[in-house]
Image (cartoon, rainbow, N blue to C red; front, side, top):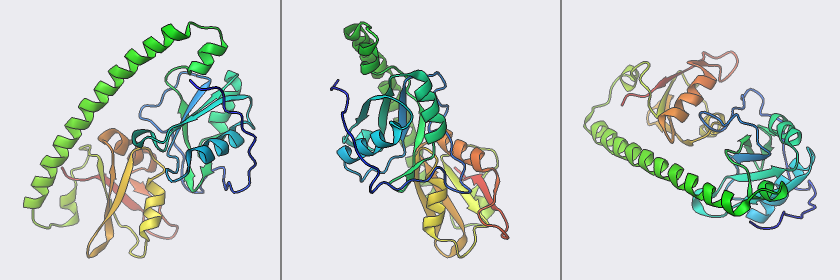
Length: 261
C-alpha cells in the first residue's frame, strides 16, 4: 500500500450540495455494511474525473470531518466510480458517513457506507500483523470475486433468455409489461408526465446503486423502463421511491412496478 496521500487542495472548482431536494439518499449496497469501520467505501462517483483530481477533491471534502490518513481510488475499468477514504478515528468516520452521504460531487451524489474490511493503512498504524492480514484479505477477496462471477454469469444467462422471449412477444397493453410482486432487475414506469425529459428520469434513478439506464418506449411518452445491475438493486430503488412516486407536484404519481420477465 502506498504512503498516505499528502494533498492540500482547495475547494475551487468543486461544486457540491448536501442533498438533492426531493431525492432521498440511500446507502449504496443492498444490504449495506453496518459494522463501523474507520475506512469508508464510496461509489456512484463521476467516472470521467481524473484519478488525481478525484483524490484531491475527496481529501478536501473529508478532511473537514477529521484526520484523513489515506484516499484510495483506481483507474481500472472495474474500479472506476469507487474510492476509499481512511480516517484515523472511528468517530470521525461515523460523522463523515452521516453528513457527507448524498453530497453532490462533480454532478453525482456520493453513496457512502462502511468498508467491509480494514484498510492496510489502519492495520499498519495500529501495529497489527500486516503480512498476515494481507494474506487473509487476499483469500476473502478471491471468495467474493468467485461468488460475484457466478452471479453475473447467471444474470447474463437469464437476460439472454428474456431477450429471446421478448422478441417473440407482440406489442401489448402496458399492463402486459408487468407481473405484480415478481422481482426483476428492470422496473416499469407508468403515468410518466408526457413532457418529462429523459435526463430528469435518469437523475432520479441513478442515485441508487447499480443503475444502468432509463429506456423510453417509442410512441409512448407516458411509460418507460429503468434497468439495474440485478434484482436486489432494482428492488432497493423501488422500495426507496415506493409503488407510487411523486415525480412532480400537481401531477398524478408515477406508478413503479417490476417489468414482466
